[in-house]
Length: 158
Image (cartoon, rainbow, N blue to C red; front, side, top):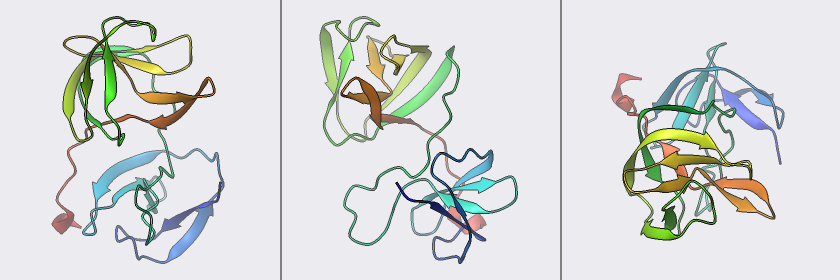
């Protein structure tokens, strides 16, 4: 785990002004897609941080930042599958519930509820079942399987 660079502009190539230590918490006031297709967050002190590691040669960019665990809740949210392998939609909230279907990378879906499972991962209620927000590795929440779909503003507005 290495520090995350915070730059002075939306462009990924903007000079590093500060490095955020692993585990540092910051509040993002904006999330925008830049001209290079990199999702960036604007911090309260107007610095920009990339959501994923988009260095040259990285085939599947890892997340550099993640949302602090948002609360459980109900509503209507659109998510997109970001995991390379298909993910399970299970009939019930429990991780042991039977699989009713699988969703592939890039597939979008609506969730109406977000609930924390005993294993420590958030579960999302879909039209026909439940999916996990993150995978589990050795019983610990690991990489994200889905991400909340946020309509990015056009990079040209930058």
